[in-house]
Length: 328
Image: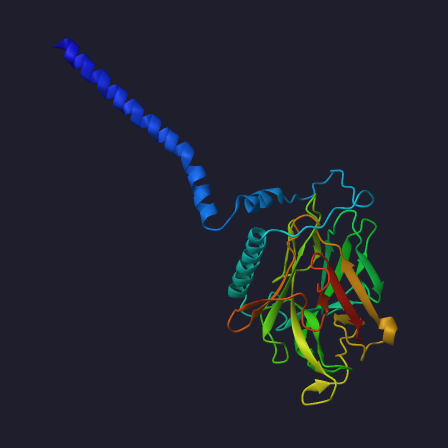
């Protein structure tokens, strides 16, 4: 009788132990099963590997960061998975910004926009925004002609200054050709003259020890962090024949400044008032993005340049060219 009871206890213990072992094995298998399910849904293992490879790090004070000289890197584009992840993050931030600020990020200004001042200082009545864009190490970022206060420092990084001014002063323009000019979007309200879409230009900056820095002001609804910088733009039309609501010259804001575009008139100084600024963006798994979001429907449209070509990636999607015009 006792031996029969003992055998039953041994059988029960063995059964329970087997169940626990099977559960442990299942726990080990589950991650791979999920991975297989992910792969079956269209995400291949190579894409996952590329995502893992794109590890972006922030610069820590005291670290050795060599940015000039040395071998060049082969430029490669990020996988669709990375691109989708970046765009999703940017759109989520934009939606959060717009739900938080009913009017603008600068409550003293109904329609704040950014222009490029001739000097790094912004006059009274305007807000200064200054940031460093950490360009590709050992890259070839450069400026040519008139770029106002924008310049490339000794490490090949871009120093960018904007002045936040009243966007309501900007209207349709009479230019030498039918095109558009750009202003940096700094708030959540648009005038009747601004194109009914928001242009987003995302810069995938240097991955290794990224040193992106916001020195002054607020870029919102743009973003700046150790992964990259996103700038938003309003586009305003210009026609070569004068018409209703068109101005012959850009507004007098009390200081010399520039906007983005490819028009040649009216430009202060003629050819001397025109310039280009190139940023050499991250070479490895580059995730640069350029797209517009419809102001009413939220429909997203991808492009290789912003209307008017003030920002252009047509021939070089992994890098960015700003066309800058001095207008005052």
